Image 1 (cartoon, each protein chain N blue to C red):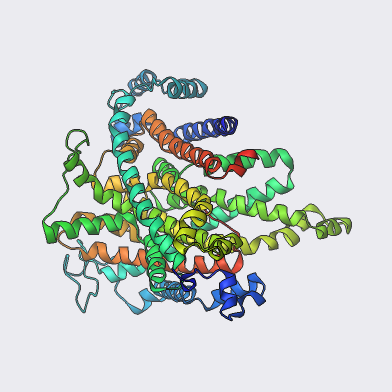
Image 2: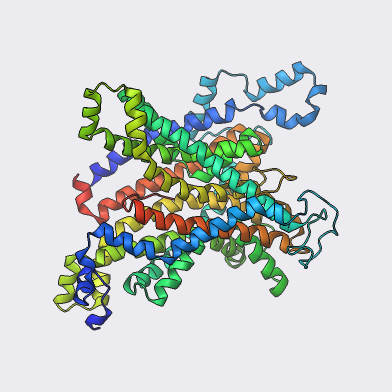
Length: 302
Length: 317
């Protein structure tokens, strides 16, 4: 094997006259990543999904609850994704499902974000006892496989959309708490904090004006990554009957309902599943890209 | 080394205790118990004293600390008590469910490791080539396909194009290995994708980082072939992050298996847990949840210990 087969460590790149080494590593990584098409594809996918959720029902004007059409008809021009067992148009349900799934994803990540950040700030600002107690709780929640804890909470509370969001939010809050706490501790150790304090700033002012803004960047990355996880978790919960309940279509509950008619009408299962997959793919593309651009050191166990 | 292992074991005890308290309280603080679940909507016609007597006989009126003590001492001694619904010993239910879940999880993990690590190595040794691109896109797809959706579509395709259907009744491996594997391969494959993708991506990035190190350049300068340098020097040093995700993913695999068991109607731990949740069968919910979560903790512990084996520097800290 010759030197040409070498993996391109930075040294090899430099030998070939590519001036990678001249740039600081972070900058060169940023330059490479901004050009990365995968991030852009991700953005396009998510923009399309959001547009479909918001504008879809306005453009495709069939009511998702109307049972006025033939039952279990295959995809055709008038119903591009076919109709379901009650004679409802599947396209309008997938579009409405986009709203439901995105909404559940956003709200549950919001719950995790608020709970986690609040716990982290309390841990940092209210002394070692609060810190120790809260962080042990975080450790214990973290010791569960997420989906199993979500099934447990959602199942026990009883299947409903609100309970699903509460379950997902609670299960993913520890991840946000850990990242927020690490970031906040880092900020608190900086000299400017002492300066701000000596100028007479209160704890609250220090927290809100100086610490919280430093948390934004890592928490935004984490939120993007967990949005896809939350949507997938909701779909899993709905699929086993513990999430969104039948008349209301989320992508997961549509798959749940499709199960019975799989042999007769495979399109009932194909389209909602495709919608989930493409959306998750979009978030994963963006998450990958954001993580490398903003914070390459942050390992998130997913 | 032994001190290191003992230290890790001791650290896991508070985690176990915390988990057991959390599961215990979660199960009890939520409205509705097994009696409500049994009576369903007809509960308004039931004589309240009979209802109360039923609760007393099931031990549901005991003070919470007593109930917790029964739960936790049962876990330690192995006397898990009986199901509140069927009256059968919980240990019997678990003994039937454990092999199913673990077999799916182990086969899935094997598939994931056997595919994930080689594709990761190929990606890292040919960065930005077509193989890398294919592996990268396939990896992101693997992270994005809902495993239960893949499983239902695969079942549909296999039965309508090939006329193949998996058996409906669970066949234990020891009584009929062929029949058993023909039931298990598809669920295992479906659950393995996420882990496969994660392992492959981690292998790629970890190996790429190591391949940029000076000692690899030194090895190559001394005349080592790329193959030798990767196999002998790079892989070993790239192993720790790969081990970490493998350990973590094994735990998440148990979550995925839960949903897949429902798709295929396989009576494993997840299936048992979800049914018990519907029935509010406290002992079964508690023990299955504790088992699934406990395996996750133990796996992380094993990963911790393996760190020490792979990297002697960690042991000394």
